[in-house]
Amino acid sequence: MAKGEIVLGCLAPHPPHVVYAENPEQNEAFAEGGWETLRWGYNRLARKLKSIDYDAMVIFTPHWQTYIGTHFLGLPKFKSKSVDPVFPNLFRFNYDISVDVELAEKMCEVAGESGIVTKMMRNPDFRIDYGTITSCHMLNPEWDKPLVTISSNRNAHYYSPEVMNEQASALGIACAKAIEESGKKVVLISSHSLSHRHFVTESPLPEDMSREHIYNHSQYVWDMKLVDLMRGGKMKEVIDIMPEFTEQTIAETEAGGLTWMMAAMGYPEYPAEIYGYQSVIGTGNLIAAWDPIEATREIVL
Amino acid sequence: MSDPEILFGIYCPPHPQPLLSPEASEGYGKLRDAFETCRKRIEESEADLILVYSTTWPSIIGHQIQGHPEPEWVHVDDDFHYLGSMPYKFKMDTEFAEKFRESAESRGLQSRTVAYDGFPIDTGSIVALKLLNPDNRIPACIVSSNMYANRAETIVLGKSARDAIAAQGKKAVVVVVSSLSNRMFTEHIDPAEDRIHSAKDDEWNKKILEFFGDGRLEDLSQLSREIHGQIRVQKVVAYKPAWWMSATMGQNNNYRGEVLAYEALHGSGGAVVVLTPSKGSVGDKEFDEDDVEHYHGDRGVLNTGAL
Ligand SMILES: [Fe+2]
Image (tube, rainbow over all chains, first blue to last red; front, side, top):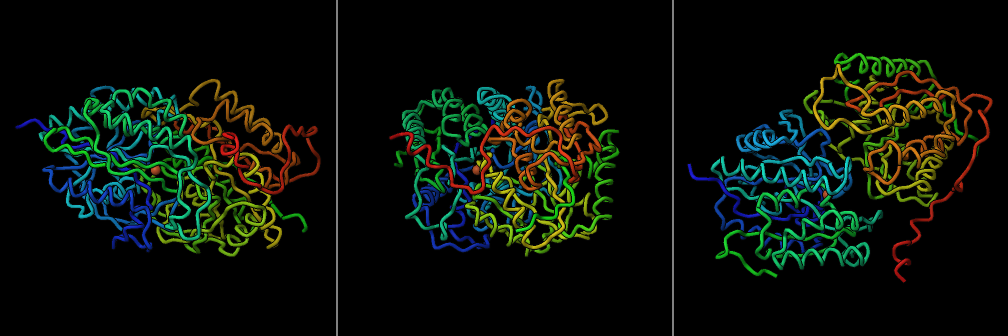
């Protein structure tokens, strides 16, 4: 069996607003549009994914929060409705997803062997979080690939962002090893915003773009610092400053997603593809991808 | 406006073990028994509203209030999914929910009711309502805990609840769903060997329960920041339940306090406490921070600070 590999890594933010604005038939709410910079960036990245041969998507989500270890989806099918607890007015999504249980079990096993506390999730009534659904829908609206969701263990809450960085790195390395042993071609998805301070009020029409802007300039400056490092192929440096960035901007990187993905990909020293940056209810959202193959790597924006 | 009629308050933990696996440890069983005692108290009372403030329902857009008349779903906990599913169908007091929203808005808070089929009611609210009001004999209301809210906002939210209870002439039981110390073990454990995560957490929990036992709710409210720093994992900006509970129940120390159970829940501190309004106060309250009637927003601290 050929060695498995990571064929692409995607930073894919999941404000439910972008799914809402796309008006897919699965979502009950209706929008007049909004957040085009993000949506069009996503559309372009989704087209790139169509040109890549892969078997499964593996997504790390901040909205399946676990405190007792790292959990993996462990049943082949989940069909239900996901309602966002924070923005139920925008996101009530009927989903029907397939899980690559074999790959999930392999990752759970290898992570366990490396000393990480793990658990397979086998309750058929379990509801898939809106982070998984938003990122996966925007990257693959056809939903024609199986996925694996990995929960985010909240080390940043229990210990510190430094401990989170260490543990998420260990998990990333374990997942990369499991993927290699599986023989599969896998797309990794790190599902989160960058800076993450929200407005606590919402305009009467949520998609009214005349109201949308970053929460404050300091958040913006930090976000741009990260984008510059990503463009420059300095992912080790990004991960090294992650604790400070996370604390300064209350970033959603606190869940460990980007650290996990970068560790799994060996801290790329090549430029990230940048697909778009826009604020959503004050938070900073970047779509980016890391393509290990130089011949297909693009300068997008 | 006359004072609202609040029959008593209950402080109880959000973890699902007392509902799903009370037999797994002696401690879980004791917590379950304490919930049962509260259920009977509610049944024997003249309550016509159960008002729940849940720390496991975080919100961002202001304060969300459950406004669906009959929310129904099968819920599964993020961590404890292996303990089983929690099917629920509750009866909500939608008129009260609207009144509560209106009262909150009139005190300067952002608030909205949410009424969507399939809305994910949180583990803590489900555990409390299933154990305290299993037959939906009394209509309920649930309010979220805003991630960013701090003391002023939380106290004003409590006063809004009070306004709404008084305006509708309800006889309410107030339920706060929250652990004491909230640090769980980060590994899977044998429930029979469950214990409070650390001696320090245990000592602080017992101190808090001493206050509860003496009916000193407002004193606990005043101690909230200290409690947050000492025994709360820093998931949110502040330990808010005592602020809300005291503001809702009248900001005093005049209660008969009963600690019905105190046990570990995967390392965190789970207590079931009943506070019944009574005459006579324990000591004098010491107010270190201003009382607040109306919420004026975050005052643009971040924006003006840069000028
Ligand atoms: Fe998020």
